Image (tube, rainbow, N blue to C red):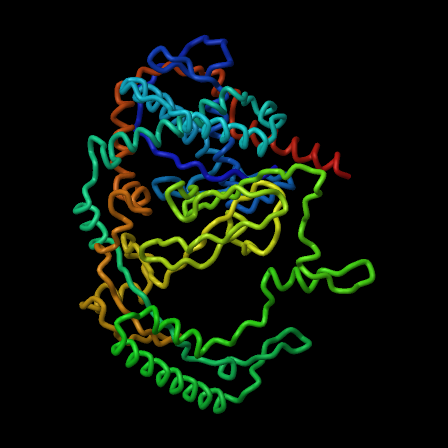
Length: 490
């Protein structure tokens, strides 16, 4: 069973409830303002959270275990047993679903074709990833899964209805600037280690004990020498940084002068070196290229280029899709630009692990992904308790922007240049990071809205269904399913 991605959830308010006495319809878990709610929806919320929480507790997905008595941290930061937490969580999320459904309809909002396709794809992936057989045993139908993902999409669209660029409670660029100034630091830095291998050298004896290879006196001398060298290097680059307005160039110079060159072969080199004929002789890349027989019609294929958000570059860009014949090579487009970032390379996978080879002939529709990097750090200090000493120093002690300063801690010397976070235009309306920052800013307020929608709900609970669909039942079915799969694989 594959691990689920965590589905973002919003906590809800306490609700006035009325018990459904004598209800025998086990297909519904409750009725909310006259709307019957599938039991499968409630079970699915419990199951998805059970899956997520148990993976956090170390569940490998291959062995049966008892997790319900283990403690987790709830949304209020309290320690509770997983078995006690799950019913409350699922109940609240089920009410969320109804509230979101009703508000979406009340505002007469509609799914676009793209929204509907996204929901359908999510349902399909979920059913396949979790196994339809397993979901059925848990009491979850495809219809319940569809309701689950429909509500998630509605929740997203409602958020944008209120807080998006054209929303009723739209957040202005000025408000975002204030938020960034109050909650973020923005900086670039060079870190110079104050120790070397010589000062930390150690060996492991046959007995398994770790012993130093230097005397205490030698260690002290080596440590002082390493620190002196590190300080000299730090002062050198601090001076360079003060004389050069482009700190990125200084960082590049430091990296080139202090890091050992890599000897790893590129993907293209490795492929060329590995290519041999039947007798073990090297074969040139030209000899490997696919050719089209004169007797065959060339097959037309497409090469699509995607940006950092996995969105395809448009027809009006140099990175627009290419149409070529099977066996031909894609043409490398101009490097795309992204403010505050440097283009690195094109990759053949969305995870950006394998560089795309434009010298290789291709025979089917292909996707290529842009990778960008930056020397810049945007760090949130909203939670002061988890902020590092370095972050606190940058926020509290460095007063001027764009002026290099030197700082040290027990491990490193740092050449730091602090910048104004409010100048990051990619966090403003229509910027790449706009969606993330408005969600961060308005998440709790949106929770409050959902809470308001649920204040007057009249709920009839199907007590027999709640008694039947329990965390222990979910775990029992999970353990049985794991045991069956393990036995079938023996």
